[in-house]
Length: 149
Picture 1 (cartoon, one colour):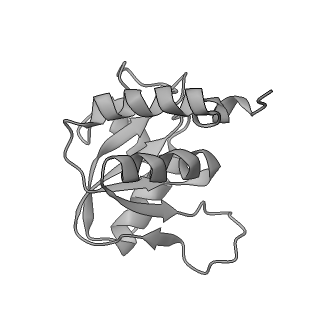
Picture 2 (cartoon, helix red, strand yellow):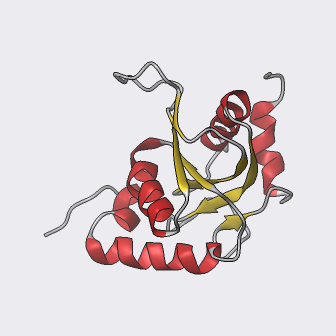
């Protein structure tokens, strides 16, 4: 028997992870990015697996209120290039905005897009789960970046 929280369903269990990964690769194989960036438990299960499968670098961004043994808010690859944020769903956009803020502060990479792999995927209009950097949805995320340096 396999038990998991609703938000972890797509990334726990062999079959669920395999199907979720296949969908992601099919969507992302034509996108140009060098690094997979994620935050949180769900992203920690999915992000590195996707990155290694697609031969990409990995960066983890700690949540603002995360209690961790690490002093770093961002760990992994921070060089130049284009990064892809992966998350399960988008609700308010605060987590995605936090990732973008941390990448802007500590990395030389530019945003290639966002891939949402959760079943509901939140409030996006993209059936394949990809949000490009010029998508209207980005405005909802950028609201959380206003007034921050």
